Image (cartoon, rainbow, N blue to C red; front, side, top):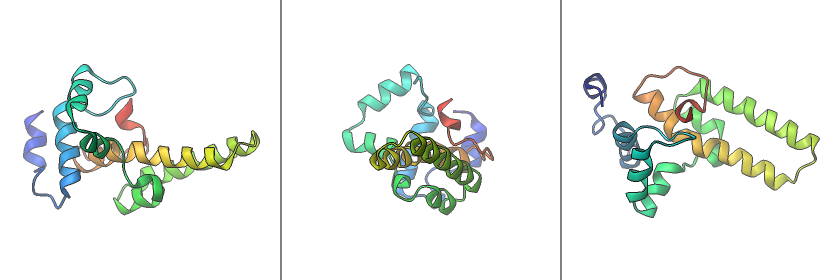
Length: 136
């Protein structure tokens, strides 16, 4: 962890819930989840209990989608998520997919990206529109 981040961001005293503090500390120590995860991230996440692993990976953003991103102050990523949902819905509409598939895609797009996106927003001061920023 670089010293600049420690000085600029106090993980214990920033008005964050215990869940966010846990996520932020884990990301700071082990890196962000990537499509191809590092060995350290894999090892440390597997050592966590089921509840902690669930807390680290998932979020209520799946239910509220872009509105949750707006609530957290990530309006750029909320716009991107809205566009992504629109594109997915058009594609699924063209192939006449089941509505359950649309709902699953909508939920997963928010649930899996919210935690690393909020970490980057709060700690690293990211201004990116890329909701997959932590994964690449």
